Image (tube, rainbow, N blue to C red; front, side, top):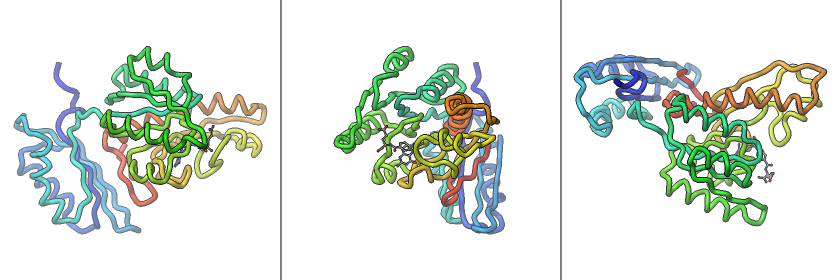
Length: 290
Ligand SMILES: Nc1nc2c(c(=O)[nH]1)N[C@@H](CN(C=O)c1ccc(C(=O)N[C@@H](CCC(=O)O)C(=O)O)cc1)CN2
C-alpha cells in the first residue's frame, strides 16, 4: 500500500530576517532540484521583521535520496538568507518519552492515538514518579520506569530521567500531567523539545490546583494550555489552547472532569503539530502552521 502523501517527501521549516525573494528562492531551489511542492505556508511577523515558512515537497523523480543529501543541497539557500532552518523526512517517526504523575487521562489518550496511527510517533518508554500506570504501559508493551521524586532526591531522579532520554534517543519529552518541576538546567537541555499540558488557560491560574483557583473566581470557561517547558514555570511558548463552558452550579470536581477533555485535546494537537514540524518558535511565542 502506497504511503499517505502527508508522510511522503520532506518538510522544510525556516525563519529568517524578512527580505524580498525568500519564497521565490526556496521554490526555485526545490524546482531546480526536482521536487514538487505538496504544501507551503508562510507568515511575516512585521513587528519582529521575521519571516516564517513551512514547505512540504515530494520528489518528482521518486529517487532514493537521503535526508542528508536533501539538506546539503539546501544549505547554500539557508546561508544566503541567514535562515534558522530544519529539513526532516516527512515520514520520520519522532521518539517520544511520556512523563506522568497521578492523572493518566492525557497519557491514555496519547497511547491510544499512537496505537491507532493517529500520531505518527514511537513511544519507547514512560517515566512516572508514581507506580499507578505500570499496568497501562504493560498493556501497550512499553517499558515503564518508576522514578520516585522527593525534595531530597530530585537531582538523582533527574539523572535517571536524563539516562532514559539518552538511552532511548528521545526527540520529544511530553509532560502528560507530570507534576514535578524540571530543573533550569534540564529545561535548557530540552529547549524546544519538552511540552507540558497546564490545566488552565494560561496566563490565568498558573501553578498548582488551577481548577480550584478557577472555581473560586467563578469562571464561565475552563481551559487547558499546551506549551514548551522553560525554567519559568508555566510561562513557556504556547502551542495550543482549548476551552469548555462551565457554570455556577458546577463543583471544583466537575470542573476537573470537564477540564480533562480539553487537556487531552490541547496536548494531542500540540504533540501532533510538533512532530509534524508545524510549530516554529518566535521568541516567547510560536507560529503554528496547522
Ligand atoms: N521547569 C518547569 N517544570 C515544569 C513545568 C514548567 O513549565 N517548567 N510545568 C509543570 C506542570 N505544572 C503545572 O502544569 C506544575 C507541576 C508541579 C508543580 C509543583 O509545585 N510541583 C512540586 C511537587 C508537587 C508534588 O510532589 O506533588 C515540585 O516540583 O516541587 C507546579 C506546577 C511541570 N514541570
